[in-house]
Image (cartoon, rainbow, N blue to C red; front, side, top):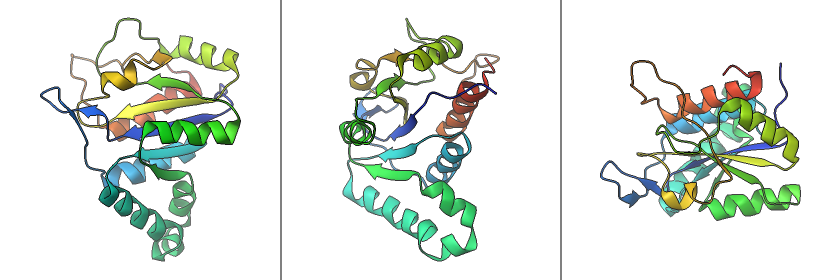
Length: 191
């Protein structure tokens, strides 16, 4: 097994992301994403999983779900789910996430943007792992919802990760599936 970078964080952005027409929008948080990405984060050794939405009602919904599985009936019913949800937080912006990681680790994290589309200059998994390991700082893997991360996010990234290689040209995994595959490739080096 190959080692993960010392501190790896995950963020799922619901804003700023694109819709199908290329407009910057805010998407809705989904219960499945919260559950599955929390479990993937715990399984693959991420430090924290951040759900990012500026909408107060969406943040309240996430808080209610987290309380159910951390402290409520869900915690007693499924202790392993409680453990996975212990890594999950909701924040209002990517800036809040970066500030939280910076405070935790004492320096600003490197930013890695992900997406299903091919970008010029995108880095492969092997090269990314080498760069992450040699840098020594924390890293934040940023995933988007809707039709992908807005340019204001990708433009500020230290790296853009190459998309997962589809067969037959079809590349429309759910974000929760993509997170699991990316974490597995970073952890075990299957690329």
